[in-house]
Image (cartoon, helix red, strand yellow):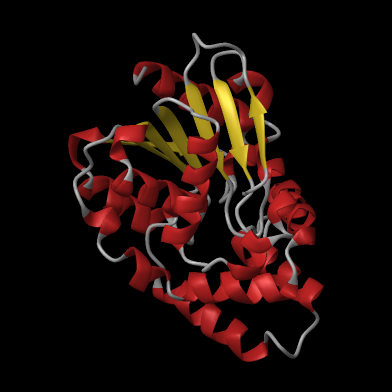
Length: 260
C-alpha cells in the first residue's frame, strides 16, 4: 500500500485527500497542514515511486499511468474507511484527482486542482522530446534541476524549485523514466476528460505566472460548466500553494467550506 500520513481531528470534520505531483511527495503540503487541520481531517498520500512510497511493490510493479495511480490512492481511502471526501491535487496530481472523480464520483464531495495540468501545449511537448533525447546522457540530478528551472524559472519562486528538488530525492532514475513516459503520453491518457462538463464542484487554483499550463486550464474551466470555478493566485507560479501560501489557503478553504 502507498505511504500516507493522517491528521485526524475528529468524526465531526470532513476529510481532504491531498495528492502531490510528479517528482513530489507529501512534503509539498507542509504550508497547508496547520491552516487546513483547523477545519478538516487530512489524508496525505505519496504516489507510487515517490517519497515514502519509493520502495516496495507499488514502486516496482505498478503501471505508471494516471488510472493506476488513482486506484492506488483509493485503496488507501478504502483501507482507512474514509467517508465521502474533498480531493486536492497539485500539478499532475490534479489529473489523478480527476480520474478518481470520474471513476468514483460517489466518494468525491469536491475537487481542488492546484497548478492543474489539463493538456500539454506544443512548447511542453517539444521540451519532452528534447529531454527524451538526452535523458540517458546527462546526470540525473542535473536533469531534475533543469526540469525545476523550466517549470519555475522566476527567481522569486526559487523556494518552490528547492522544495521540488528536495522532494524528488527519493525518486529513483528507474521510476523517473516511468514517470517521464507517463507524462509524455499525458494527452493520450487524459483524452477529453478535462473537456467534459463537471458534475462535482471544482476549483482551479492557478498561479498568475504559471505560463506553461494556465492557458489550457482557462479552456478546461470554460468547458467545465456551472460547477467549475477558477481563482488566479497572485505572485505565484506553478507551485502556487508554496509561492503564495496565505492566498492559496484562504481561497481553497473558503471554497471547501462552501461545498460542505
